[in-house]
Image (cartoon, one colour):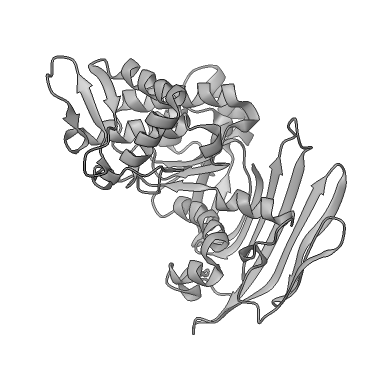
Length: 386
């Protein structure tokens, strides 16, 4: 998982230095920079998939992304990712840095890019580029590839068989980012197998059909969790049609016919989608899942159940569970979390900064005495810097 994140001069993240845990809940007022933190990770994921230039173009260009304060310093990212040991591999640690300069005319260049790999107590350099020139390196020191262009392409845009850096690239490539839109989710899909739920959920019915037909054990867990909190729910299906499409349908007590997804409540559809991610098969699981405003469209009871199911599932999976970063404005959601999971984001002089309220001893004492709930403390402003 991502252990450390340092970002400089990206949107409101002028100089952000943050340690992350398995579960991270970002709280703070509007315009504080919560979405910018998630977007900086999404930027790196997109860079691996479609290239550095496209990542900037999709955001309006370098000048729209760069910190708009007084300096013209480069945008830079630093990531530390650790992968725990398993039956086949020892623990691995990757440290990655990239520094990007740009101009108002749209020209960009990578001034520095560096990737190291540590395993078994030995550290190897995997990528070493300066001003677009340098090489990718195997752990044994041999050259994997060389670069000599002007510096507009990241070394992570290249796929070289056998290069250890591919594992780091695959980690970023596999991260998922979600902001579900019920109106988009309620469209029919082609009966094609889906490997993941897309960002806005537009392939929801196809994704659900894939789980139903190929992963019955996981699909059973989704249905059971849904039926436990929605007592009138009898069945959930994603049947194929004769024209090669599928839509999710449900069956309810006291209702004779099936209910098509078009007529299901927004909260029910979103709830089922989150359950499908929690119980996703291991081969479909993402190392990192980022969610914008998890509470949207959900009744507090559904939100509470979702957190309980997630916590239980995370305990079952242990280190195999996905790392999660969630933004929220809901005191109710905050109240259901652990103080150690919270990150308060505030703005000072136009720049976002992160605070860990768990470092405040008096807050822990208040919670232990049960004088106030965590949601009440957040709503009162006690979790911030003031």
